[in-house]
Amino acid sequence: MNEIRSAASIDEREVRYYSELAETWWDRDGPFWPLHTLNRLRVAWIRDRLCEHWPDRSPEAQRPLEGLSVLDVGCGGGILSESMAHLGASVHGIDVVEKNIGIARAHAHESGRRVRYDCVTAESLAAAGARYDVVLNMEVVEHVADLPGFMRACTRLVGEDGVMFVSTINRTPLSWLPKGTHRWSLFRKPDEIRQLLERGRLETLTETGVRVNPFTKRMSLQSSNAVNYMLLAAR
Image (cartoon, rainbow, N blue to C red):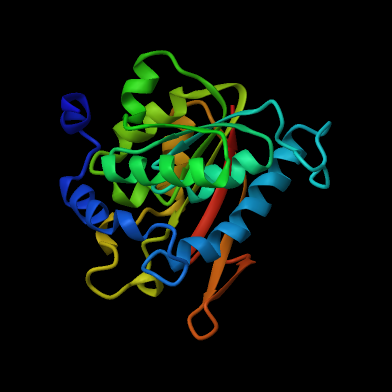
């Protein structure tokens, strides 16, 4: 726990905020409804990109990610981790909010998903020499205090021939949100993320924007990354 609190990337304000919301992770009508909606979209996009990266895999297979080691950084209550496990991956979910890990473990037990969860930082895993085929860095970079240090650790966690997915919110006038939801100043421009990936010897292969319809609460892929975007980078 002391190691977690001393990590430069930890934003204590974010930790307190998500600790208070931890019990609502799996409430599809609660404050995390956008993540549940986004999850259906991002899981399909991640699956398809991984099957393109490793052509011997088929997105139509029942467990297309069988045999792949996946790290879900900032896993929260386990929404994405469980989806990856359902597709056959060996998943390790990590988060710096202890309550999140407790919720994730309990839900995985109830759902029968085999996911390993730990309250640990990406920095400590990288220092220990951990490596994964796939690193999921989804909706996390807008919550960290030391972005270069955090991304340096995350890129070290990507094994040879491995990949990293990053998704976040672009820092543009269109992405301005009401006070209390996110801090606009911490939103990350695509160029900023690409440069940090390049420093870690990862090349951005593809990216997509995500459109949110505020009236229907539906999400879809789009060419513009002016608000939400996802990208894939490979070693």
